Image (tube, rainbow, N blue to C red; front, top):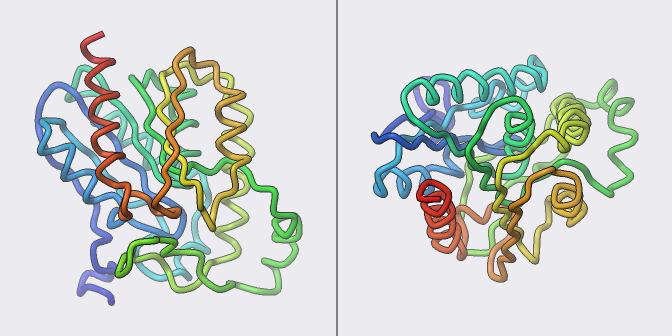
Length: 251
């Protein structure tokens, strides 16, 4: 379903809350703010100022992703961070899936107070990704990868097709993020679903191994699939995120 403004339902960017602590939330590949809106609402209710931007090429039609590069996604995140930092004393960054790569890249170049990553992606063991640059020249899209949610009725509002040019940009983002992991020194709270049909465990293992953070906490989620922010374990993620932020602010 598309709104009159050309955006898919629930894809609107969100800005809200108040206070001296800010939280920037970043959605995933082919998704939109819809996948993180409950998290944003929870943070606002706890007294935080929240920014949840819509990444370029997302939330409209999958064809629109053919027109953007990963640096356009990062620039959007960077601007949102800078605006939030100008209004608050500290900025934490929360992210889902591909948003995790963007959050880590941001953490390598900005003084983020902490990173909360939910099933982040920075690489894959799927060898089919090796042929995507060539395949994208002759094929525009493949079947969708969205809505990996265990809870019945869950819907993140992702695209119904996966644009291959977008996937090529995703792999370029992964390469950049992997190269900068050693520059990430902020504390990290990483939530990982035991059953994830989108991101394999190698991403989390790479992040835990390569970041320079002295405080890295990994929490396993037993009931949720990839889009855990809309799944059974969402309350655990929200509460864990709040406790993580509170411990670092008070510390």
